[in-house]
Length: 108
Image (cartoon, rainbow, N blue to C red; front, side, top):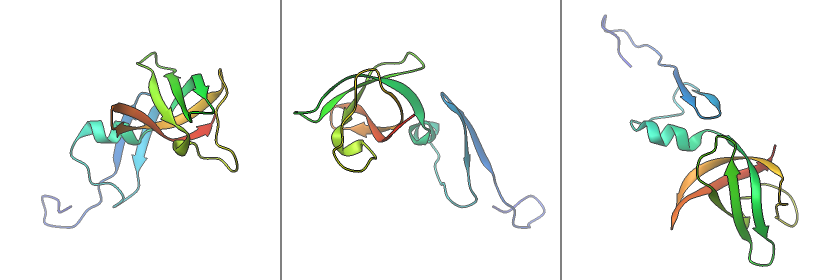
């Protein structure tokens, strides 16, 4: 970024999200839409249900927003990727084929 005096400067992006604050390191993020920033923020929630044989289920976000679809491929763990009903998790939101879905799901 070039400031008013014509010198290069650094911009630090800090975004308030549903789960806290997101700080983008210098040069890491170039987004103009605030909704895109919210998608990158970790959200906490509880597994509503997860069908191991079908490999999908739903997570209820802690902020009370609409349940989010989760596919086994979004689970970040070693071995068999599954979730237990009532399990506390952290995740990100991404646009899925049929609406919002969980990404980068980890145990909280």
